[in-house]
Length: 461
Image (tube, rainbow, N blue to C red; front, side, top):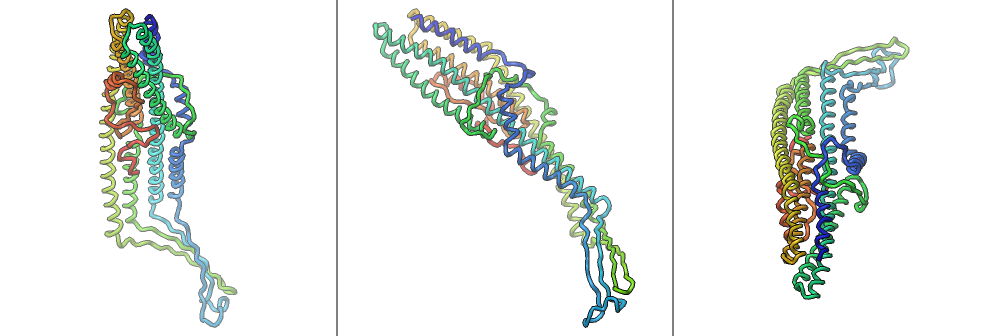
């Protein structure tokens, strides 16, 4: 009967590892996570697509500042229809003329500025892809640590249940215990196997999601050396810090600047454009002739065309300005929500680490001692174990949700925060303990790499 008490220190040692204080945010990141991020950002097709879009817009800048292509005209003027009179008649000649269009001064510069701002818009879109991919990797890695932490908990629980079944069998065989204790121990071990299989499936799914992000085979292993409590301490961010990194806000502001330049260009379109023509007319044996001319476009349909274009861009500018305010308002809301959640989850985490886990451990050890001395039933010891493991599982869930809020805050995501969840644990009491962890978001969990709602701004770019 001393077996059960000898198992308690081993389980408590695991608990102390889970409940250790998290490292500071200044600590270097986990090498495994750093490798995953580097690999995903280097090879993911969405990154390559976004980079190509930036380069496409960069190639448009010099095109926008170049003069329109000149036109070459070739012709012949001949007196009569019977034969070619070039060289015989003064009014018969060949003609070679070159015409160069010349936009009104300032138009080419504005078009070049519009193209340059388009690069800012595409760079903002690329930043959203990069930040979203990094957040997906961090969420997937955190989920992997959560699941592996849960599997370690079930492994420790399995050790006790195996010994408990042997002890219940021995006591039943000598007439000191009941068959119900033995059956209950066997039932709990069966439930534990079921929960372990579910966690194995969750781990494989999470690995497949992470491997997709780094373009690997779904079943490729990802070794981890860190535990969930060892991840950097989540920090709060001020609104101006989040605004400074928000791709949606940067894109919306670039859209305003671009619309203003388009408005200036539309106003200049009310000015005429020019074209200069120079040509020479060879006349065979006669002295050649030459010509130089200037043509001017006449914007006589300005009321229906150019003025309408100016009004169009005026309305567009108003809409773009409203979009900036819409993004800022939503970003302010999300930042406030996540900071509140981080503060709440921090307090809950500290409560578990300094109070609930300590009390749960003490209750478990006391019940084990009473069971050993025959003053507590087997069911009481089993429930104490399940309650202790359930509290440890809830603690891990809180750590995961704390990281989820921190990841979303750093991502400056306009959508709701995607929660990070692992598998379900074995017994009803464990599940009840896990349910005590506060929900970090009303949104359902998303698989690693799933696209996030980036809000209205980037969708319109």
